[in-house]
Image (cartoon, rainbow, N blue to C red; front, side, top):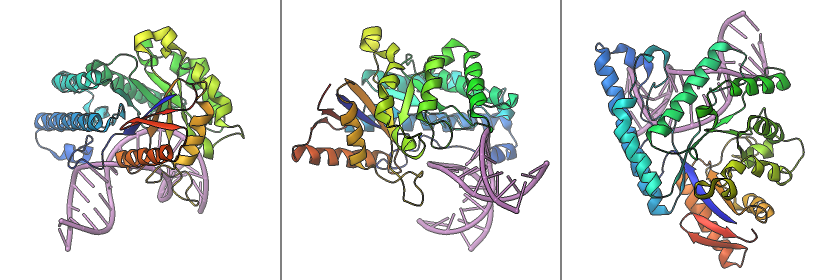
Length: 334
DNA sequence: ACCTGTCAAGTCTGG
DNA sequence: CCAGACTTGACAGGT
């Protein structure tokens, strides 16, 4: 099994390279000249995209092929008060440049719209905003010229005291969205509400690939092992399998992080513990030829580099791991 | 240069 | 029913 590691949004190593500079609505509203304010938002967005490109160059240098874009590339992009503003035409060249670089270097890019995007909601206004937010994310992927392998990962959402009907509402709302959006979505198990088995059932029904978060599973499960769900999880990715997608195939993806502490087991630690991750990878390596692992640690790319060091150490000691380059490994089996 | 409070969002809990 | 917690990086304003 070939495993590629990636990280989220920002680097601890690059200075002054935030891809998510913003402006608050409060300060925007204070400006005398609204048009000038909109131009300023566009300039901030261009700076965010420039820094995203710098981050991708940093990824290339580290051998990283998996990277999650920040959702905050365009400040206030979906704010109600700016509904008449469309920054997309202005930013198209900057988006295209980012997408070109990613494609040239075989990088897998994704988004993770934050947890305010909830398709299980019973509130119409929340659903409308959620769909607008997804539309926004998909539009950015399209401006980057990325095909349907570039995906937006979301959670199922709240349960509102009745998880079963919340799940059904999710499915109905999901089905009501345009195919262009639906085909860009993956579903992730969360750490409080929809656990891995529940998310998997909804993924299968919706026809959306499932991203397994093994840390969330650890703190929210029904007693089953993640390995026991794995064959079904892999099947949710079948439209991206080499048999079906050929050149445009895409490995399943998992998320990994480690508990911050015993008192805060759901919080994310600075770094990732190798042992539990390695145990999972070994358990699934026979049946999985390729896998992408998104590292969700506080120390971002630094955590990725430390994990790679730990893996090199494992290899030196004769463990079932071969480090291929800066950020990928081959593991026994598969 | 640094520190503290605020901002965005939606859900859920405690009072 | 309403206020506050939760989460996160970064702004905003004060020192």
